[in-house]
Image (cartoon, rainbow, N blue to C red; front, top):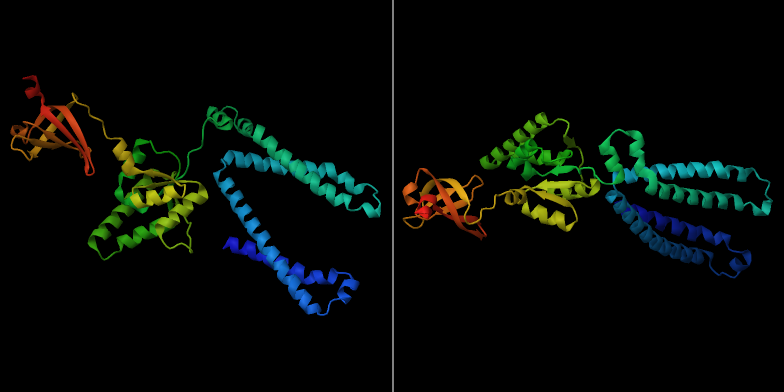
Length: 359
């Protein structure tokens, strides 16, 4: 919508300049024109075309600046803003005497020209100085804070805000993940995610209703446990229909990180250059790696495909097939890993009872 407004504004401005610019033509030139209305029509159309071209350039430039500002660290953004304001103040103070000088009437254009050029020069100088020395402002604000000094030097980076997806809330592992303390930064729950949870909780399908209520209960618990970190954000986008698209848009606007376990949302967000933390990928990465010769204490739960085989499961759900383990069904036994197999359905570990290996 904003892009259309920018382009439309330049079209109207160009058409207006073309229409009223006819009045600025010399009388001799106007006397040679057979149809003044036709000339106005031509200049208006020509001005509108120029307005379209300039508007497209302005719209592209605006979007590029917007992306750069979103990707800019907050400390650099603040320091550059301060440098820009200080540069303009210095420009006004130093250039003010120029307007008091007795300049001949034919050279009056020097005053506004000097004001514009001086303001631009001092503004750019202020931003450049902020890039060089602006980070040290944090030291002045809190000189006794080691963390502030490291952030000022660029050694530390502020933690990105995490945006919770509906599936991530219903999954429930986010509660345990917050409890471990490994997940840092603010946790943001958009209003449209709450609305989707409520729709699922009010669904006619019993399974969906249970899942929705579970998600609301989990969200209430983590909000009570971490009131300073969990933020309900009122953001919404009327021009976007799906919740996944809204999540990606919000993450792009605030330069946040999307927290989800939805495979499709993960792929779509990654394609649009949005940082994603997938809980399923984390769970896969945190599974312990067992090598041949490692010892595992395992409870044999059932018989395998072969009569002599026993099957047990690790805490993460990995199936362990124990050769000669059929006689240990219902009991715990110490087994030695002999190999592992990674399939599309998951990982499978093969082992033998430690007693048989020793024998």
